[in-house]
Amino acid sequence: MDEGLLAYGAERVMEGQLPNRDFVSPQPPLSYYSAAFFFKLFGTSLASLRILGVSIYISIALLIYGITRNFNGPIWSLAAALPATILGVPFFNFVPFAVWQGITATLASVLLFLRAGVRQQSYLAFGAGVLNAISILLRHDQGLYLTLSILAFAIALKFTPESRASLPKPGRLLLWWGSGLLTVAIPLGIFWWVKRAWGKMFSQLVVFPLSTYAKTSSRSYPHWNTHVAFSENAVTLLFYISPVLQAAILIWLLVRVIRRQYRLPEAVMTFLLVWAALFYLQGATRSDWHHLLITLPPLFILVSCACRFFVEKLDDLSSQWSVARWPAKITKGTPRALAGAVLIWFLWAVTPACLPDLTNKTALPIPRGQVRIEGGERMANFIQLVQKAAAPDRSILSLPYYPILYFLSERRNPTQWNYLWPGDQTTEDHKALIEQAKKDPPALIVIVKEKEMRFYAPLILDYVHNNYRLAGDSGELAVYLPEGKP
Image 1 (tube, rainbow, N blue to C red):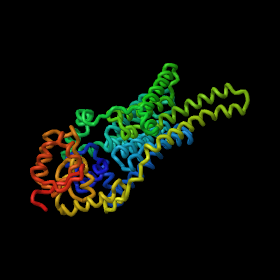
Image 2: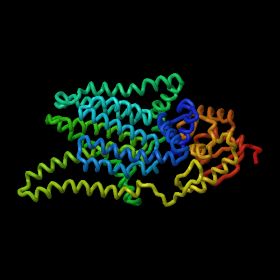
Image 3: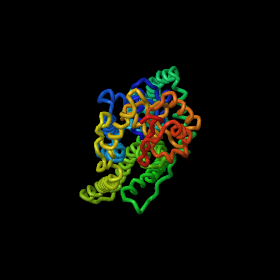
Image 4: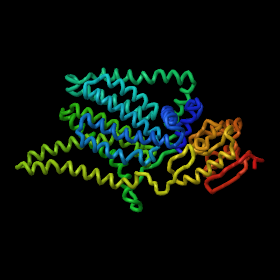
């Protein structure tokens, strides 16, 4: 499904097609080009995508550590990075979805911008702006959240005493950052305008989620369930722990403002809080595990910084209460040991729910496979049947949402739509899909869960039934061949 969307979209751009203009895409364009780049390096296969995914997995942990090291010691920075090794890309089988590519670019931008703002190296903000623009082109909502967070940080810096004395001026930071952002945005914007892709890109990436996504893809928050494993309930708790922690840190910041104790550490915490809170919105509409996990990297950094601050405060209190040297060592070590124990216990609890289960996965032994999936041998046999039924110069049609078949069988899609989803497309879209299929008649049509499709795409099914005959049906999967074809 989603992996096929990325893989086949990358193949289409390798053929010279433009996302949104030549095929409908729910994601910004750059993720397809990065996948295509890895296809060029390592060959066109799912294994190449997973190499990119592993690279992202390593990069995210290192970037989280690097960001936190700007204002934390190595132990607290490691504590921030450690959860990302479990709560993240592994749950997605190391597939480099656009969202994880966007998170990587976002983290890299934050690393440079914080160094520019904290280490008096304003020119680094230019690189942060470039990476901010790249994050928008990888995952537009994350790029927007980062932009708003950077503006909040610049405002916070303006009200800290240090910013007037020893740190770069917020205006200078924003000038460098904005220059980097526009260096990428202006030429690409002109390119897409000239290529007539801008209008459709705006409609799909801005209008569509505001007008349609919440109606067709929303999911309510999960609830504690005594009938499932504790690991699943532990993940469910993350939906509620995140806003609670953010609210507590917000209250603390307000207290610091009221007491006129707002300094550079508080400005950094403000940035992290705004960033984490905005990232959390990614899981507000579609509240499942997949969308929860993508909200967490900023939270890891925020919580690490908050814990360090409060543990240091506890250290100060313990020093006042201790009457001898050895009790002071014990009391100072206790909060750190407790925090470490809680982190290790929680990661141990959620690991069974978040790491991929390889027990039922077998190799996919075809040139574009070379990865482990559930039913790999069966999928390989089916792909070979598709290739026999459709010559290399013919198209096939895979409905409603299995573009992986185009990619693995090396057969083209005759339409602009790589997926159908209930409510996402209009009746006019369905008519356009049919007309495109008529101009390039598919040699074979594969439909998965046809009974459900009848409720949201009846026109397309009528076209299939009127022009094709059922050649095979395995329950959920039906294969149609043109009338008269043996």
